[in-house]
Picture 1 (tube, rainbow, N blue to C red):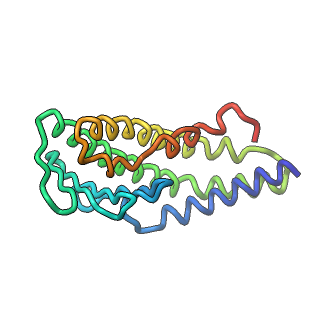
Picture 2 (cartoon, rainbow, N blue to C red):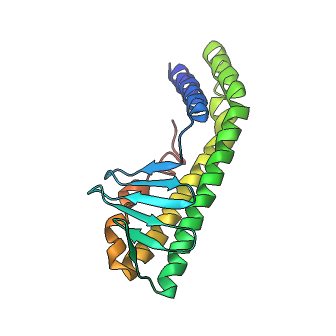
Length: 180
């Protein structure tokens, strides 16, 4: 029964990957506290918990509630890094989506094989995709550190520091070294 459950989960995961890969959505992350970070063109748009918006352009210019915010050179460097990191994650996400498309058929076939034979090969078949997802998750953890540096240096940014520890801790590698 345990093998059937694993295989069923593998099949469900593969089907979800197919659905996700087919979605035509913009790059967007929603945090546990209802903050949203999304790409709009080249800009990063952050919606705070109070629904106000902050925008960062690739040059490190910051707007809060539609008004320009004066930043120092050091603050601008952090904002540029933050913006570039999100664009890099968007590219990595697109690459993971393409990988999902290429792997989906094989994962589904493996999951069906596991269901029929009682084998347990679905996790192995899906490992490259899981590894890419873990890299993205680790990127978000690293981006939280940059975000926190910005909010420490620029108090006006604090409401837009929407990635919190509970969004990243124990989410990326929660099942490492655990029997499923």
